[in-house]
Length: 251
Image (cartoon, rainbow, N blue to C red):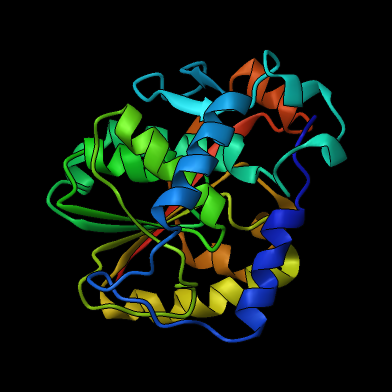
């Protein structure tokens, strides 16, 4: 089983219905304790801990070929759409870049938008960031982030508010890992980016060369920071995409 993009496309609905103004200090709770306990059990029971990816320093609960769900139909999954259980190539290269350039993130306040499994947020914390906020509108994803953060003995805060469109003067760095997966959503998020950059926030985008990003006008205003070859397994799982790129824009 490979995850569909349905869960990611649902984020457009939140964006179109208006952004919730979140802050770093005041965050929404992802679930109550009972819900979190049930989801934790469900996540751990349907994933495996793996370090077979571009950031072996980080252990993650993911759906792999060794997991039952990998081989089942989507309708048999206990999760609506577990995009958080896959380590997307844009997220992998962004996390690798963070760990390779710790000086860029040390002592910073970092916000990871569309955090998914939480790898980039965890990488930022490992790199010495002072505060890290993992943001995702999917509350199951945020439980997965918390599980993975604990697994790696890091402390990452979470928010389920839709922070796209928001601004906070406490933010130093905003991370976008594999978020340009759809042309319409790319247009929406690029408008927000144009507002963020003049504020002095540094932006890092991880992308494996998706057409909705590579053909977008925004790319011309970004600087290429790094290029990585994707592992063979990652290529197979992502329609043959062979390289991943990290782009940055800062004021």
